[in-house]
Image (cartoon, rainbow, N blue to C red; front, side, top):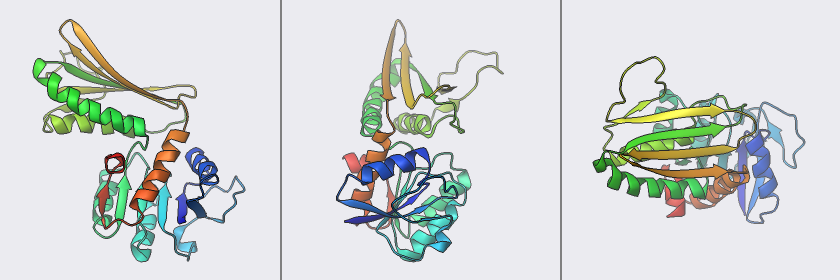
Length: 251
């Protein structure tokens, strides 16, 4: 059985992971880390990694980037791999992720769903075929009205996957309202919509002359992300130090 520390256990995703783990005999949550104590869980909850002295097999993080170094320090000290699902990481945070991954295994993904990672494969193929044909690329993402970061980590993940095929030559444009000029040839437009209880909707538009191709993914439940995180935990538990992604899990 894989023993899990769940950071952000009392958030929406934390409670979803808790629910799914309760029905999976291969995993068990042994401790939660959360400054919010609004739920009663079947495992002890601490407000800091400094207060948890036991060892586990893996950490799943679905919290905010705040105090993220504390988690990395614990992971290094106890040689515990990390599933990093937090979005909105700063450049400083990303450098810390890279540095930490030289000492322990880290699986980082802005989106843990199998569907999104299948979309990424399709986008890479489509980009290779369509970019030479002059197709413009736009990404539209939609989320619930409580989401604080924009654009979403998944939208940036999709854009980065496309730009990887384009050798990093395209710029990201988030707002066209302040500039009165034609669209540039090497742009990827990214738009964010916030409203209601939308779990997650991502659409990539390839707009060419007289034809448009759209690749879209819609999430109807947070369960898909929780299941992906648990699959990631099972994957990474015995891996050597390094930076991994969901593409490694679904390969």
